[in-house]
Structures are given as structure tokens and as C-alpha cells.
Image 1 (cartoon, one colour):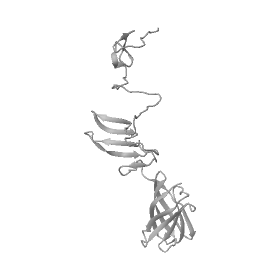
Image 2: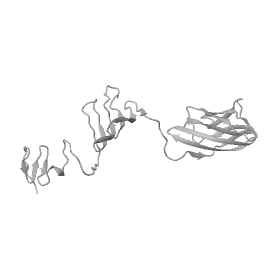
Image 3: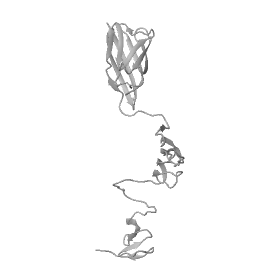
Image 4: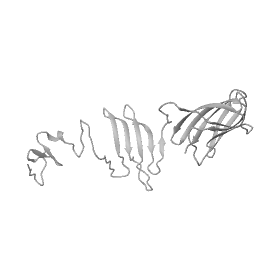
Amino acid sequence: MAYDFPNAPTVGQAANGYVWDGEKWVSSSSGDTAFVKKTGDTMSGNLTMQTRIVLTKSASAQSSNIDAELNGKLRWTMQYGNETVESGSNAGSDFALSRWSDAGAYLGSPLFITRSNGNVILENDLTWGGAAWTTYTPTLTFASGANGSASGRYKRLGKTCAVSFIVSISAAGTLSAIGLPLVVSSGFGGCLIGREGAVNGLTWVGFITPTAGGVIPYNYLNSGAVGVGYTLYMSGTYETA
């Protein structure tokens, strides 16, 4: 069945069971409730889209927002391009996730990303979620005589690894290397700090080098000599590959 609609209808004009509302033809039996108005509307059900949502700003000083409310009060705002003016060199229209009080007052933006350089700014401290640190068994390398065992834990965030381990010495000699849980970055080393906690309480440091692939331990005399009963505690962070 083909319908013949007027080419230039006026608001309220009826044709074939439909009424022109100034933008589109709507069913005269259901009225506007069966359609979403281009000028703005409220939906009572879910909206499913098969392609994408496009948020368009008409000026750089405007923002493209998705807001979450409770009883008309803002709770969260996701800004896919905030009000920061685009002044050139990719500046402006930054990303922000903002939070609001029970009364709908602005509380802050816990997450902010600068469009020009991708820098991520966190408003508060970052809390690591998930399970406890991962356990691992550090490999021990002895240059002479010594023997012992080790246990450790680590947590990775991006390319940063926080590590802590304990080395127990059962035979005297020289400890030349302690294994790390993750591969060290080829461009940078570092140091771990620790102490002997069972015999003399002296300070130890662990020198991290990409070539060694682990920690080279030294006491305050720049020596890796260890005695029976030594317990070395070390911890710190390093950059992973």
C-alpha cells in the first residue's frame, strides 16, 4: 500500500491517519508518544543503537556531556570534551569525569585527561584493587660457599613493579644476585633498600641492572658477604620491560 503525503504540510495537517507535527508525520491514534522528538524528549524504556552516538558541540567553549541524575539532581557527569577553549595545538575539549553531591552540587573531577598530550590526572590517591600481592620465589645466586632460601611478593601497576622479599642464609659465603619477579626495563635500573634483621641489623641495598636481570646485593661495606643465620629484608619499586 502506498501513501500520498503532501509535499509542504502545515502543523496539525492530517493525511492517511497521520498528523504533521512540524518535523515529522506521527500516528494520529498514538500522537507523539510513539516517537522521539528531534527537539528533545523523555524515553520510558531502553534505547538500543547499532552504530554509534555522536555528541556535537557548536563552539569550543561548550561541553559534550552525558549526565546521570537522581530525582533531577546530578550525580555523575562524563564530559567527552569539556568547556576548555580549543586554542590550537590540540588544546581544549579535554575529558573529565565529575561527581556531584546529594544536593547536585559539584564535588570535583576524580579523573581528567588532557586531549593535547594524553596526560591522566587523578584528583585523589589511587587505591590498588583486586587480590593481594602475588607471591614468587626469588632465585639466589651465590659466588662462593653460601646457601639459603628466599620468598617474595610483588604487585604490578602498568610498568611499575613494587616488590618485597626475604632471604634467609643457611651457609656463609657471598650472595651475588637475587632474582626479581618481572623483567627489568632495558633503559633504567635502580636500587632496593633493606637491612639484615636477625644478626647485626646492618643496612643492605640491592642494585638493579638490566644486564644482571635481578638485584645485586651489597652491605654497607660494598660487599655481598653473608653469614649463617642472616635474614635480609628488601623492598622497593622498579621499572619493568
